[in-house]
Length: 278
Image (cartoon, one colour):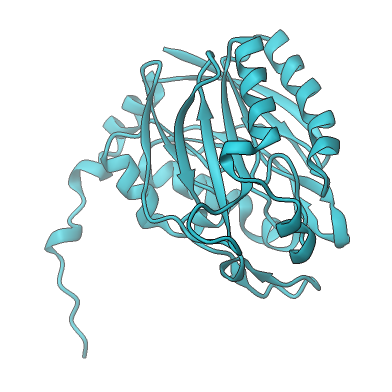
C-alpha cells in the first residue's frame, strides 16, 4: 500500500494571513502533483516569538481563521492534510495557549487533534529565549489514528527527544509517525538527522517531519531539512535549508520488512529488567 506524501517547508511569518499566502499555493501545487497527504510544519500559520503579540493575535480553535483555511484546502484538493501545529488560545485558561496539531480528512473534517506534550524550555546559546511552558499548556495524551489503512502517530518537534513516546506509539501499531517541527538552527545542525533516523530505526516506522526554515520575526532561525525516513533509517527525501516542497512515495510493506529483519519491538524486555545501584 503506497502513500504519496508532500512535505511543505517554508518560513512562517508572525502574521497568519501573510503565512497562508505562502502555504496555500504550496498546498495546491502538492495536490496537483498527486499528493495523498500534505504535511505542514509546527507553527504552520505563524511563528511569532514575541509573547505580547503572540497572545494578542491568537484565536481559539473554534474561531481560528487558519484552521478554516486549511480545512477548506483539504476539501478543495481532496487530500489528507496534517497541520503540524497551530498556536491557539487554550480553552482551559485565558492567558495560556496550546500548540495543537490536526489531521484533516479529504472532506475537510477534523479527524484528530494532538497537543504537544513536551515543552521546549531550553537554552541553546543562540540569543533566543525558549520557555514554552510559560505560555503553553502541555498535552498529556499520545495519539494513534487510522488513516486509509495506515496507523499514524502524531508528535511535535521537541517530543522527538523523548524516545519512550515513540516506543509507545510503535508498540501500539504505528506504521508512520509525524514530527512536524520549527527546530532551531543550532540544535538542528547538531542533532536533527541523527534523532530522526534513530526514531525510525529503533521503532521500525516511517518518520515524516515537515519543517520551518530560514529567519523569522525577531531574528529567530529555524533549520529546515524536512525529512521522510524509512523504517530502515534511509533518508528518502531531504528538503534542504531553503523553502521547498518535496513529494515522497512510501510503501507500508517496508514496515513489516524492517520489523521482521530486526524484531526489537517483539523482543524488548523493558518490564523485566531491574536497575541495581552499587
